Image (cartoon, rainbow, N blue to C red; front, side):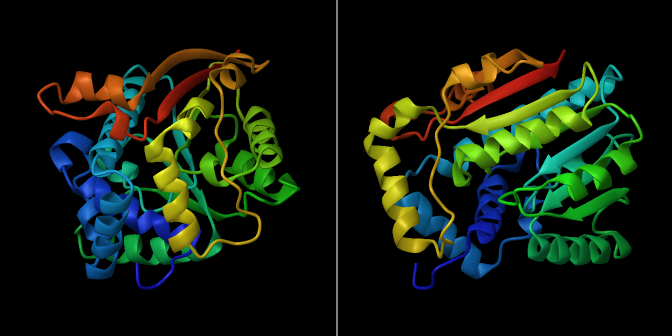
Length: 276
């Protein structure tokens, strides 16, 4: 990359990846976000880290699309709360009956809210009711964020989604976030979380990722990558682990005819948790 990008700007790159195969990702609107500069960033990322990254992001989006859609169909959830929503387009591809709370950094929220409003006015997107909340996940006090979310929810059932976020947070931030999740959810609510396992740190493809991030991302001083073991999720006191998938499993399920080299895949793990 000729110009370094901020952590939150990786959301544009993720959109470019999801747009690479809309039939696989089920994101019919991801193409609205990336411009020529973003596409160049995405090409550089895939070329320097893993050529399978666009494919992997499409698989992840497909998995959560189907998981959430299935829960909506059986009336298990009323709200999708997307922490670190970036420029994901779940509100427009999921059931119109689902309500949405989107949480991210203030500049992401301001930009996204404006664009989404314009596209709905122009009927490029279908109308959806979305509540936007600006927040800093490095904040040591989530009281204000908790109040804003619980005021909207009013006890409604929810699915909290946190994807593409935990890698950029520290362990203390993650602990505070999951304590926040527990405090705003009811029994039988869900969390969908994405992270890398510690074992991946020993692979060449992960080292390429770290080198690329350190060389090309204009990161703040708080950045320190994080991997999370399975045991973290299975040992959460107030949640049960109900499903656990990873990129290679999803590839076999959704794209069995696609040839990939496992050693060149940044194998992300997806966890579904249900509150006890």
